[in-house]
Amino acid sequence: MKNIPQSDSWHSGLFTTFDVANALGASATSLAALLECGMLKSARQAARAGKAEHFVLDPGSRASLAIMHALHSHAALDVTLAEQALSSWPTIAASVASLVDFQPDASNDDGACIEPASTADPFQFYGPHAGEPLPVAMLDDYIDVIDGRYLLWRRPMEDPQGLASALHASQQRLRIDPHDVAAQGDFLAAAAVVRRSPEHQSIWLGSIRDGRFCPVSSTRDTRPCERLPTAPKIDEPDSLATLATNYCSKHSVNISLAARSMKRRALGLTVR
Image 1 (cartoon, rainbow, N blue to C red):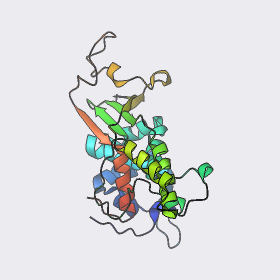
Image 2 (tube, rainbow, N blue to C red; image 1 turned 120 degrees about the vertical axis):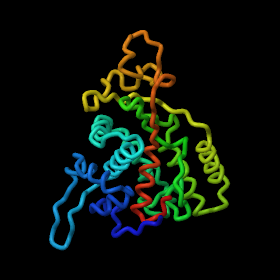
Image 3 (cartoon, rainbow, N blue to C red; image 1 turned 90 degrees about the horizontal axis):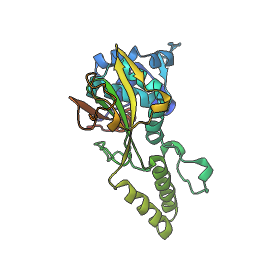
């Protein structure tokens, strides 16, 4: 379905309630829950003469909205709990937003850039031809909701921002000189990395207890998932049970893909 945006909400950062619903492809039920989250309440700007009520959303806030909606829609995670998790781990939304709204490093600008930074799209995520957003294993972040109570963040070991910067720089050089052999080599080298089988770092975010999200302590925030208990009944320190091999349910949500789809809808591009 192709969406026709009523305004350039993505680049302005100003979203009406309609813009939020359109960008998320949200149902009335899920949107109602999102509208009650603290982040949107704090971002709400009252209606003024000739203008509707709107929300001021920066890239991180937009990524957070997409992640919360995806966790609610695909893993049945309560929006309030999702917001608590993201508030405890702001690096998650920042990681996703860094590629969704990629900005070239100005310190590496050699004068070859011939397009506005706001339109930089090194992975071609937002071209009109890309009607079906696809996962990119080497780049995408995931949140796993295990047994309905444990949250794990899986992030690529490779540096996605570095790959984006390498691709963007070589693309800019090739726009100026399509026959630049060195630029061709740099582009192909970066593209080859994107196609590799990825390795992910697994970070335990915390667990849900008594209706609240309880983040791990700062001293254990990178403990690998295979050392975590899988259910309340497994609480012995020497238990060999692992989240990787012993759980009742697991919902794996591609939060990067959710954020890219949100941007495509906001730009009026097709999302299948």
